[in-house]
Length: 241
Picture: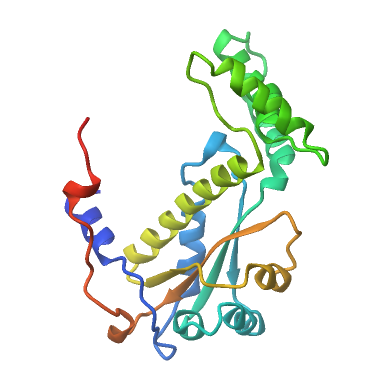
């Protein structure tokens, strides 16, 4: 891809808040964009995310209410809900280990291979495991304090640190999705204004699941862009050190 093509895709992506319900809309483009979103960078390849492409009108209408009637949700040709699933970490550990064992089958393991296995067998449980009494959080905090006292160390201590990690990965996938939609000529609007408990109820998600964002998709109307794009000057946010 040329620099000018990628630049045009990034520049095309805007948060469009009014969509044209009467315009032709190909929902297979959404499916394709989601298949690209799963290729996004994510923490330790744990892929603790789920993406819900809302095709059922009754679900769309319910989510519109959960989004408090925002014009983007109300007029969207389709909605996609990005969800974090921190509670699936054990499944993802097993999945990654199974794939590593397939790669290493019939091979004499190198030190690098052994480190890769230990990464999922030992480090991931240490990073993600929680318990009702908070013992694992205490253990992580002690380890971080002593191991990181005089050298760099991964400072994942508590449930909040784990949540941030999961939401960062999910947001990367959401950005890939929006850029893919833009590359096919469609518009999107990422939304954070919603009742997360209600969204989880509508999608029948377990308590441990969390809503990262809801993205409205479709053919945007000119009035859906509320203002010119403005950004803080580069010199205020980009630094060479």
